[in-house]
Image (cartoon, rainbow, N blue to C red; front, side, top):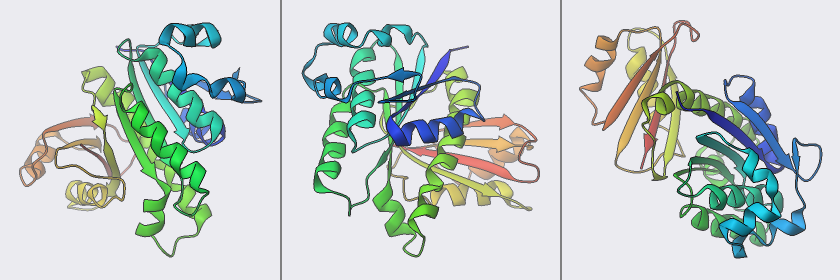
Length: 257
């Protein structure tokens, strides 16, 4: 069994990470400018893109204390701390650990500097992370135009909760890890066609992209029943986690790349 840790980076990352940690078996570590397990100096984070991996450890010695084989990073990109710490973790552990980034991106109406900082950092992190799962606020706003911003922001922690649980229950134990830029959709289904409905719900996601797909099914259902439904789809990989926690519902998480 691989060991895993969740790093909540910056204000949004810490807030979302603390919510996710309530449902996770992984250790949670918060990293922020104040009031966190690890407190960082925002001015030092500005140096991250220009430091070698060896120098990163000298400037940020707490990095060496993160010894899990799989590192799940949650951050909101665009700000100084969340973006800086997320980039720091990727550069420090590139090629040495499996590092999965789950990042929210700014609304298109936010400051141009914040949007550009997010874009630039995401491109750099794709070179150092095993996989990056971007969750754009702008896509949520476009997909649900009548949804209030506060309600839209409540979608992220729920998706992150289920995504982290799927990594812990299926992807990490099976050592099946997505690579590169990865899209995601989470859906639920109930009733006679609950497996199919859950998959279709997950496929209808503003954050899902790519022609290659994998599906992770969770619920009180038989392997043969899932296999029968999946004959109508072209998934490259699928997993089943049997659990009664969703009652009559089935959960499906679709990954795309």
